[in-house]
Image (cartoon, rainbow, N blue to C red):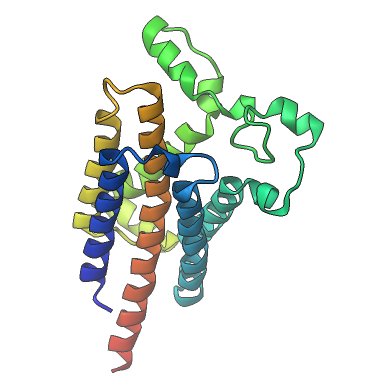
Length: 232
């Protein structure tokens, strides 16, 4: 499998998909239970499958195990643990605590403090909800894994820890693309309406799942190729 070609085509398809939605104003694709949401769930499922495959093939498994857990939880949360698929009603105590009245945790009021950051930047007033916001926690983890770890492994101690944990550095072109796509998705929200920002936000959330799935597909096949080369 030509991983370089596969990754480049996949990344270009993401750009094309994003362009089509934004240019043709296909906001209906980003609504609840829309195409983008189910694509996100599909990518998380792929992340679960391939992180599991990586666990089976690599000797050092800490990082893949962490991501298996992250992908599984994200998949469950994305589909509200099958609530609408199975037509399960939300318990009263959960409905009162959840801002969307759904059977998930990331929409609980205590974990939904993202808007308080806007309040903080405007007023300087801090709210503890900012620390518990699930989106912010995930973004910090994502940035650390894809951008900070590649820098830390340049240090000897960082390289040793990465090797022990089973961390594989993403390819440079992959990291650059992820950086430009994520940063670009924040920049283009400037001057947009609330509805337009919501569309971009949903695409960005889907892209997180897409990038993680693509990363573990690459790790799995590159590991298999190395095994084949050794056997030959």
